Amino acid sequence: MSAIVYLHGFRSAPQSTKATQLKARMAARGLAERFWCEQLPVGAFDVVALAESAIARFDSPTLVGSSLGGYYATWLAEKHGLRAVLINPAVIAPLSLAQYIGPQTNLYSGETFAFTQAHVDALCMLEVRQITDPARYWLLAETGDELLDYRKAVAKYAGARQTVLDGGDHSFTRWSDYLDPVIAFAGM
Image (cartoon, rainbow, N blue to C red; front, top):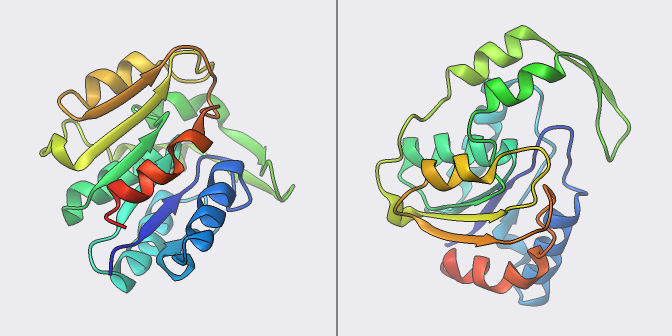
């Protein structure tokens, strides 16, 4: 059964706008049981273990990853031969996130957590230097992303389907326009 495994970003949650909009759209189309999104732990290997348990529940799900979730989605897509939609992905997550070492707060739950050098080191171990099958990927990026340079994602996912929109920001402001196309990319 085709499905979507949604991986949110750093300091984010299943209550994020993108996750809740996609979940609602899938529910409206009778696909609620084909959507998975849970709170991701801080540690990279814990994220992988949780995501792999979700992947095992479905037959070749499509990964949808936002920001740091896009970094994880890329690693998981390469390991399991899955499709992935990457929304303003953190292409060089260890470098991008090193500046956040210290106490952090989840933007949705208010929960605090420590982000350490060990977390950054674990991210380094999941780096995918080059994707092996660009046809399995779809990059969604906005040039106005204030946190990540969209050009790095364009280069990383060369040959993949790419939708790069002028303006916007890190949240990918036009997400609601892509809900149905993402569901279709996932084979539903």
